[in-house]
Length: 411
Image (cartoon, rainbow, N blue to C red):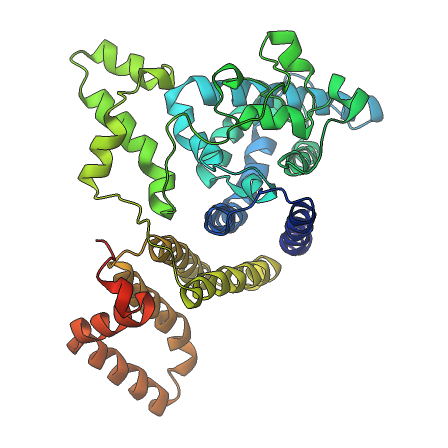
């Protein structure tokens, strides 16, 4: 699928998210929280951007494996497409199950389960690291003999379906509950209720869970999120908290055997105190102070503009230089870190703003190099900002967090 179609996918999914919000509000269903939804979408923006930069290499990997190691030389046909769909879903089931049962894989998958709400925005909580790990499992398909072109198309189709099962506004779907993964089945999977844990791993078909003994019916109201809730909007902490917890637990083991046991063992082996230790080390503390309306608007408009810019970036990606791609990706990641820091009212957010400014200057500088006055103005502005960094920082925090909240901002 060309990048043109992928660029239009973002506004399409946003429209569906807004439609779900409208339906939920009309039914008086409390399915959305502004800051949780922003955190969800932020992770999705980062994944979509970074994925477009690396996913092209996956095709060449599949093609190489199929030509070099393919057991069979498979050609497309109706029966073959059906077989590929079933195999893809079966491989997904085992990838997904291992991602919950093995710490090394849970490191990249945990991000998808951190949200304490359950709606279409949660489907965006995928990281590029998860895509890389999944690719290792998908490599089974070209080795069997499926061509890269078929695999790529199937993965795009297969990856579309799960979006629609991340919702609370759709109830049970009758006979489809018998063999398809439905919103009801997936609500169970995202729940942290004790008897719902590690259930319903299927992506499209629920038959694998019924076959391998991991199926559970939705019979009580699910509570969403982790068994120990993360309670943070930090873009960085959401991505790396479990890796740090794993490191702390592994480091505490006395023997190499036990270290490997933790790495390749269940998340149940993680030290229950590791999260608290990690939060103390990195001074992670979510503020309880509510953001004023202006600050909420600032965060919301950043996310809206980022989605527009990322769609444009994907649309024109083949025409952009590598330098521009790198700088735009840097700017986007810094902006997402900025939004998370503002929602938690961190004082160091100004440092991120400064880095964003440097990135913007790096992007526009080549276009201003031939205009002496513009170059001079940029240089003088940057020099003044450096010289009066502390003063500007103080004024920025006073404006952003407001005078009555600035004292409550945290490091």
